[in-house]
Length: 357
Image (cartoon, rainbow, N blue to C red; front, top):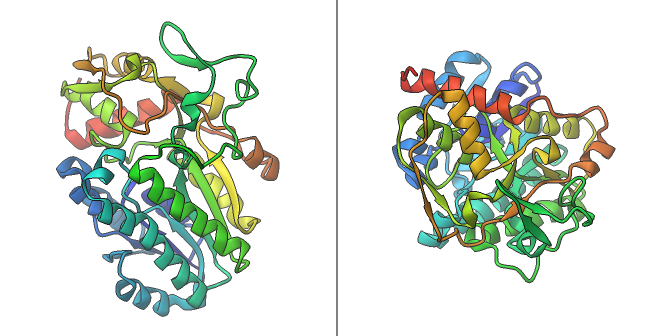
């Protein structure tokens, strides 16, 4: 029997992984205790997505467990043992701002939880491929010291800089920079995953995501940029832009495209490898540009205001360079562009909220 184990299985990337791998493995086991609702309130609840997965995929088994507690993880790993061929670890506390409220919780979820999963893998299914969903926030605010130029709708990097063509590569320093506590806890997890690959020879892979998005995102004010933005466009709820004149740039990767990266890695793993994973030059936008697209798709004028206070550790300009991954896995490419992704988010959100334009 071949088993895929997905943590954070009712979240955006977790649920996409369940759907993607459901026809590639005999059993897909999801671990999710809906802590996202604790982090972000009812907007962040993933209960609807858990119910959807259980209805849609007969070989999906859901387990409510806290990754901070080995006592809750060990029975799951013992039950399936060496039949576990793939672990996709997406469970996390994902917000800069929230991490500062409860540093112990943030670190115990992001860092200690990852260590627990790595050890359970090493003890029970050491040949399995272990994929970790990291973040571009491991680079801290180092990207903010690049030579940036302000244009009418966005910040952009000087065209003479090596990062102009493809974006930021994996060799940007993680050191001597302000991360936010969230960024720091993800750095700890990121390095742990690398070390289990390099030290123990396990098939671990780290994917440093840009903005991860898609139609099954439970976007909230503190996390889920495009999903929450589109929700505000549909409902008329107020949206606040924090700092940088609304010209801060993010690259955005559709959840399916990211999970497809996981699939390529699974088939030919490179132990301890690290990849930037975002929309790159293929799919990126500033906040102001995203608002324009949301207004065009929804047909509604957005209700938003601007605050001069930017979020601590936030990036002014970040575009991921995926050249390394594409060199290692040349059959992979993006499927969705920004407009297609936002249109999917809109249609899914309308259905979920029972809102008509």
